[in-house]
Amino acid sequence: MDAKQLKHSSHRWMNAALAAFVEGPESYDFAVHHAGVATEHLLKAYLAGIHPALIVDGRHFDSLLHATGLGSHAGPLTKIKTIGLAEAHERVIKLLPRKIPIDKKALGPLADARNGVAHSAIHDSSQAEAVFTVCLRLVDPVLEELKVDPKGYWGPYLVLHDKLVDEQVRQERVAAEALLVKARSVFEQRFGHMSGKEREVVLAAITSQPVITMSKEVPRECPACGSQGWVAGVVNVQGVVNHTVVYLVPYAFHCAACDLEIETKLLRYFGDLDYDMELFGEAPYDYLSDEPPVDEDFYRGR
Image (cartoon, rainbow, N blue to C red; front, side):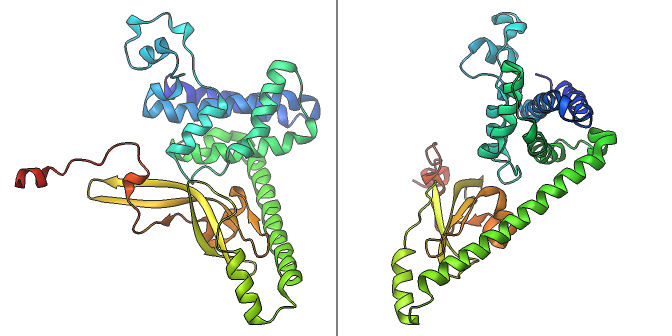
């Protein structure tokens, strides 16, 4: 449960993963397995650096005792139960909203590949490069948060890292442009024959409500057709008493007029759709489980 040890372990596993990756398809099983372990350890290093309790299974009381410095009341440390890759990823995303470019869905191939090799000796070698790229893009922002020098972490494989990430970015840019082209074509087919007034009435009706729903949806102009679309995301609250900011962390966009639908990983290619949006007029405690704080000045006045 030591952050420094976990960082060191992550570096060793990642070095072994990259060494296996460059050997070619016959070693891809080792590559994806070791990359998954390296990623899990790095995520846990970030969590443990905040507090060791963040990496243990909260349902296992002895593990919590060890994590909180009360191990003398618990069973042996070798019996401790910690979280896996998926849950570590979920916890880090909550602590670093918008900084982690890999969401739960995108993590799936990496987790599946690691588990498939570990438990069944099964993996799809044709997906190894895509799986590896998910791993690299997930690790990079965590290294930044941990203030780990990427040159030291990636070592002689830094050039390979850069090429894999750059290729993924290129593919995503092409995919983003393809979404726009398709959406504009759909819009023209649906509404190109209508008069301006008729189109205005129809669009007002079909774009009035969001299709994708999360904890909050906010209207935004569609980058493809200019109609009203909706950004869906989760609400985050930051600040202290009497100075709180409520904002939306975007996760998806949908426009009912042209069927443009943008998932998390492509939002960054669509300008301000990817920016956190302050929700003016929203009450912070509508989104918090705690009760509002007592206004002590008010009671002193009474």
